[in-house]
Image 1 (spheres, rainbow, N blue to C red):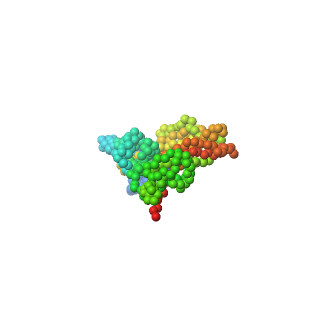
Image 2 (cartoon, rainbow, N blue to C red; image 1 turned 90 degrees about the vertical axis):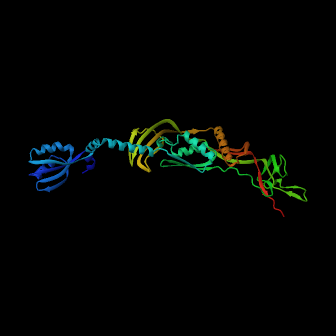
Image 3 (cartoon, one colour; image 1 turned 180 degrees about the vertical axis):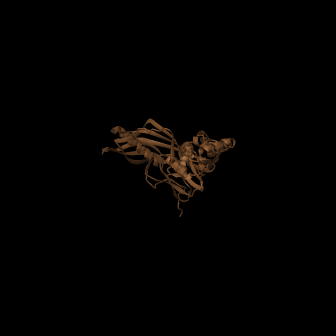
Length: 394
């Protein structure tokens, strides 16, 4: 019978019928469409079966026409379960409160571990975590996801290269990789300082060694800038040349920009849905009607419930659907030219040393072809052009 176990929860009883003609009585119940199951014969004049509580009145009416006796053997189902609980309400309340307390404690943060960081860096991370509400005793439901916390700390701290964030049970684990700190200068062997690329000398800062070039000199790759051999030519003193030589160098970049492009933006309209998940079953709590947006962007946040060390098959999900609009943006050649210049400059800065500086730019070639603006730009850059070259003694 379909969904019999579900209907049993509404309440069912086990009935014992004794007397003459129990078979006729059973047939009478079936004709009256009274649902019975588990029919068992105890002896010639006794039979037991189970039926729903809601059909009890029909059973009494059927008994009027048959000389049988009715006895109730067992009562089961949710209503009778509640009655038994009422008799032991103190025990039930205590158990529920205990389970609720354990459930809440299992979904709190009790430990925060930061590994791989220097004490000062670890202190800064702790302060940032407090700003985000990540602290002992805080419920996990009110915190950002580990991915969001990771992005926040990475943006705020320049001292770290990477930080891993993982939530295990009631403990947040942070694994930090700090940027390499400059080590004390090591003693170097005798060396010259040579040019690593073509340049025009702009400035010289020589600590040790004999300068062989001057400001405004043009130098080629491999040319000695500062010699590590000082003193008399017959008996030179060989040292490790040190210094910084700034030269003007040149970089050529090529980039292209579409004059027409499709741009996606959020309109500001959104619809929020809240739901509980029991295994694969989704139970909506708030937000039932799907918005009629043509284009959407969906953001989903899911929080799982825990009990002690176990993750329960129960979770809370918040889904936000944003309305997204798309339109075709058309750039003039002047606008596209400015964008191409900015893009080219940004890409070049990624490849230059951190102390290099762009001092001038010049457009070499500009062309519009197949709806694209193609731009070729040359940049003047001031940078340290020094490369160390060991001195090999004969």
